[in-house]
Length: 451
Image 1 (cartoon, rainbow, N blue to C red):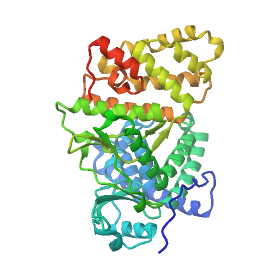
Image 2: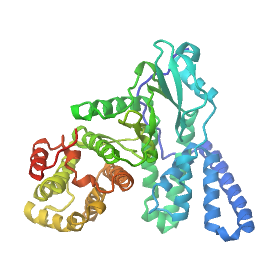
Image 3: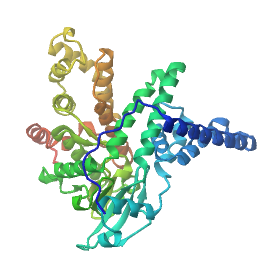
Image 4: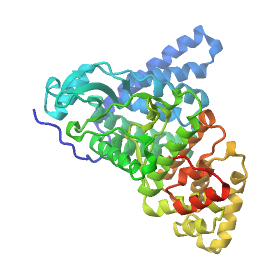
């Protein structure tokens, strides 16, 4: 048996349509129509719940039948309540929690095909019941035969690459049609959303890329001695393939199941610090830090999991983020940021000198800076910069939107676990980003930073 090569694969063409796509489109239409008919029957029997709720539940039921692509669309809708009707967005949250697993026999077949060896040769034990299941892959507990180490195998759903390739081509065609006839979809730029989803999906389906990025993120954590309380699973590349990743077993629970206590604020601060360092010092950041991907381990450490979605920010945009954070955390001076936003074209050079543009930026951000600690949002700062760029027809990278989304996750964790803490004003988060300035700031404030 020849193992599957572990090399990065290019994403397939999106803007094409053939007989396979046409046949699949007929199936999709039939499934959606069937579940809407079921919804009508439920509505007749229980009209008080309202038609929008019945219709939304039917859409999500159809998504689960249609498979991973549509579950992923449901996840996107559930995590973007401002873009979709609230009842639909709320119902789509099921797509985050209720993804059914695929049979363990299929996982075994994928592993054997990718690694070129039988399961019994690879493992002394293999649990067919997955530890967790998601739209793209699921995780199985096993013990390596060669060294007796307990590991987990992340295994992609069989045939998912070709199914998602066809489904996303159909989704793009539908989005283009909706944009032509329904203003809401044109305003929301529905086809661009599908283009972004296509790129993100096939990056996530590339296990070679994911394994290497997980390794890189783990190395970034170890770049500083004060990050011993944060980790990511070690990857064992000799047991990885095109659709499978072998990694260290983590023992703990997701952040949203962690009971608030004496250490809860410190846990959130440590996680935010490591994530911020990866972003601004290394340029590669975890792009999906929802609570299921950030765990508190049994030994008290924080662990980042699932590196299928990663963001990458180039040097010039990292410079912008550094200048923004320097202004919000260190000195409140937006002059340096003004020079950067002018160079990047976020504002027109003719708006004035750096000092004049800095004053304008300060006036824009003043309401955010004057907010109480509980309402201070660094994510809002980045969104404001992106929106400012749109006013001047400047295209900022999609990664900035992804950055803002991840900061929003951390700010939501703070509400539950650290209500007196704000990411954007905590010197500890930026300790290794601005070492000299943070040390001076901590001394001036009489603050002792955690180890």
